[in-house]
Amino acid sequence: MIQSNAYDYINVLDKALDASDLRKTVISNNLANINTPGYKRREVDFESLLKQELDQTKWISLDEKIANVHLDHLDAGVHFDMAAYGYNYRLDGNNVDVDTENVEMASEQLRYQLLADSVTQEFSRLKTAIGGR
Image (cartoon, rainbow, N blue to C red):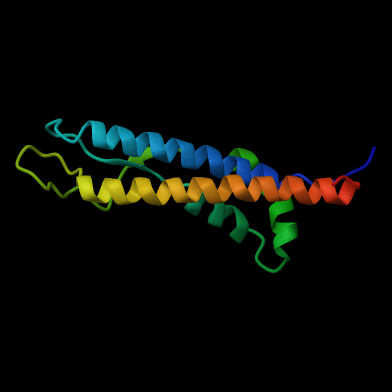
C-alpha cells in the first residue's frame, strides 16, 4: 500500500467549498428575513476553524500542516453574528442590513469561484504528475 498525501489540499479545499456554500445559504436566509421583526443575522465562520487547526502545528511547513489537519474539525456551523447581536438597526429588533448582506454575498460568490478554481488546479497538478495531459 502506498501512503500518499496527494489529496490533502483537495480535502481542505472541499471543506472550504462546503463552508462557502453554507455561507451563501445563510446570507440568502438573512436577506429573506430582512422584514422579520426580531430576526438576528446569522453567519458562518470557517476561517477561524482552519486557523485554529493550522496553528496547532506552528513550526512546520504548510504541506505538513495540511497533512495534519483533522477534517472533522473543519465542519463550519451557523451561529448568530455576536458582533452585531446587541445592535438593532430598526425599531422592530431586526439587525440585518441589506447593503452589508449584498456585499457579503458578492464576496462569497468570488470566494467560491476561487476555491472551485483551486480544486481544478490541484486535480490538474495530479493529472500532470501521473503523466496525463
